[in-house]
Amino acid sequence: MTNLVGRFHGSSSRKEEEKLTEALEAERESPRVFQPLPFHYVEISRLLFDHARDDIPDIYMVRSLVEDIRNVRFHKIEINLEEIQGRAHAVKIKNLSAMEVNTVRPFVVRALQAFYKHDSPEMIDQSDTTANRRPQVADHVPRRVVRR
Image (cartoon, rainbow, N blue to C red; front, side, top):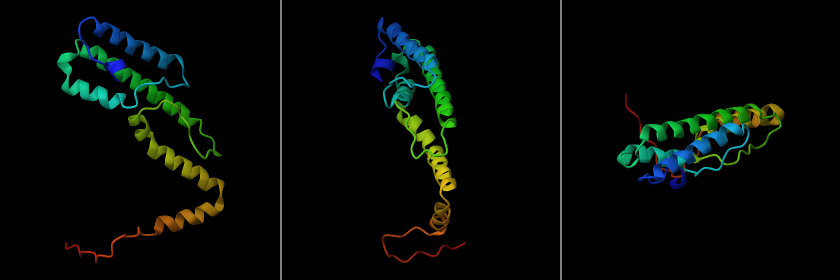
């Protein structure tokens, strides 16, 4: 993240803002391709905004640029996910950040399971039995009775 929201001292702050602006423009210009950003850019920027705000001269502009980048990227994720076909067994989207992956993972997993379930009837029986099965407990310690 230091190359996008790195240390802001003196004249380098303008250069860093320009890098963020360029990253935002690049994200907007390519509706299907995600620009390579640091894998943890969301988390790092949040930490910098929370704990190093005095070191960032124009924090409101920088925060706005990072949020705009996030919004554009999430819109692109939505577009990519809308195009998933029923025969998809995997989804490949390059250059997502950790936070973006963790945000869309539950939806993608459920969507792929639904596609797979509707594509193969034998999967319906198998998923119903696994959904009703209780999880196996590794240790054989008797369960404590919950009092109400």
